[in-house]
Amino acid sequence: ERRAVLIGLIGEGVTPSLTPPMHEREGARHGMPYVYRTIDLDPAEATPDAVEGLLASAQRLGFDGLNITHPIKQTILPLLDELSPAARRVGAVNTVVFDGGRRIGHNTDVTGFGQAFDEAIGAGPHGTVVLVGAGGAGAAVATALAERDIAELVIVDLDARRAGELASAVDAASRPSVRAAAPDALAAELAAADGVVNATPFGMAAHPGTAFDPALLEPRLWVADIVYRPVETALLAEAAARGCRVMPGLGMAMGQAADAFEIFTGETADRRAMLADLRDL
Ligand code: NAD
Image 1 (cartoon, rainbow, N blue to C red):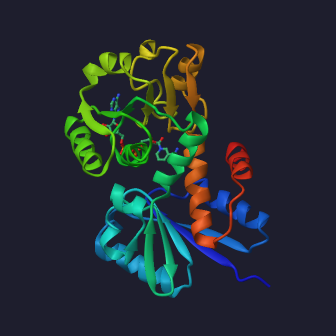
Image 2: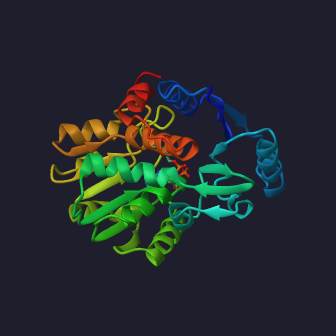
């Protein structure tokens, strides 16, 4: 009889998340009793003290690990005993595994985007890549891209300070040259680029449309979106219509879950099946 795996997801508004059923279905394929519960955070609980209390409780209650999401991916850092290289580079954690009494932090947004990118876009060299959106998800994307064979990463955000801070944080650790650019320079930047990634919320039902004018997309560009609901965003539809190679956000969403599953269980996830599950959930 296999011991049950018990995992939680802590963050604000996590109740409708698709991550729990993705993990539980993958657990079932491995013949594991696998229980994945959401722990919806009150905004007042996003403090180091409250998060420490939740971590200690999860350990006492026998959880094997946790996924961590908005707004505590950084709050949690000082409460952990050890960080994976990806978590250290991006300065954020979305996965915690309890190893005996130790709390080890990982970041599978970084590894998940990286794997999805390698599969969809290939090994490179990738030349110049423009990243639009420098929030939490943009930071994970920038960290993953900086580990890949790109010559230059250009980061654009409506909030110039955010773009600048992310560019210097990534630059400090990375091989390609990284710089920030203003949104009104996007036409010139895209004209000189090889690929572009959308890491803004544009394309979701709540943020219809695109973050920038799709008329700027030439067929030579590959176009990645990390928004995954809907799977085909307005940006990807416009890009495909213009003959660009496209990478949908579903790969990152599946990859972060598959990588976390592997960290929690030590078993190899069936990524194809998890992607199919995510499509029909
Ligand atoms: P966020 O709010 O932290 O960051 C979004 C950033 O985009 C902000 O800095 C904002 O200023 C910038 N922005 C908005 N409109 C812009 C525009 N027109 N031009 C330039 N910059 C603009 O959000 P986040 O947590 O980083 O997530 C962004 C989106 O990524 C989410 O809405 C979600 O759909 C998607 N996401 C996908 C995955 C996945 O696994 N595929 C994971 C996380 C997030």
